[in-house]
Image 1 (cartoon, helix red, strand yellow):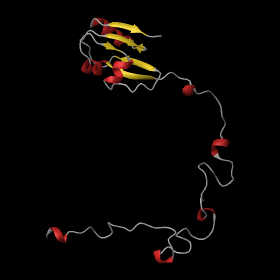
Image 2 (cartoon, rainbow, N blue to C red):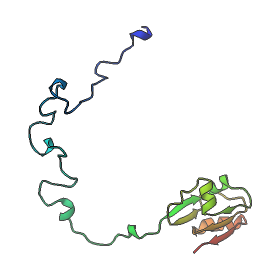
Image 3 (tube, rainbow, N blue to C red):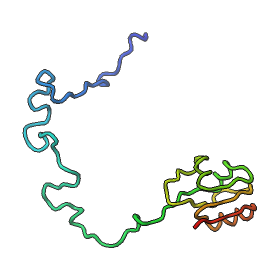
Image 4 (cartoon, rainbow, N blue to C red):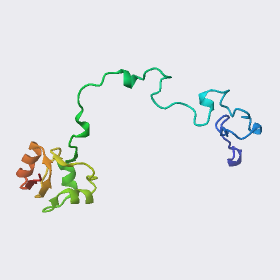
Amino acid sequence: MELHDLKPAVGANKKRKRVGRGSGSGLGTTSGKGTKGQKARSGGGVRPGFEGGQMPLNRRLPKRGFNNARFATVYEIVNLDSIEAKYTDGEVVNLETLKEKNLVAGNKNGIKILAEGELTKKLKFEINKMSGSAQEKCEKAGCEVVILG
C-alpha cells in the first residue's frame, strides 16, 4: 500500500444536510421536516419544560422551605502545600499576592486557608478565614496571622 492508495473507510465521510436549498438537494419541498405541525414551522418546537398544555412538573410540585445558596458566603480555598510551593520566606499572603501567583481567581467573597500539607516558611497571612488546624501549623512555623473582618 502506498500513500496515494489511502482513503477513508466506507461511511466515514458523510455529506452535511443542507436544509431549505430546493429540490435538487434531495431535501426539497418540506426540507426534511416532515409535513406541517409545530416542528415544521420556522422557530418551531416548544420551550423547555413545556408539556403540551399539561400543568408542568415544576408547577405541580409544592414549593416549600428555604435555600441559603443565594445569600451564603462562598470562600476560595487555598491549601498550605500550594502556599509552601509558591511563596518564599517573609512574603505576605493576601488576595493580591494569591492572584499574582494564580492560586485564586478572586471572584468569590473571600479566602479561606486549609491545613492540607506542611508549612516551613515564615509568612504573614492577611486573609478572611483560616481553619483551626491550619492556624496551628502556621503558628508552629512562626507565621503572623491577621484575620480580616
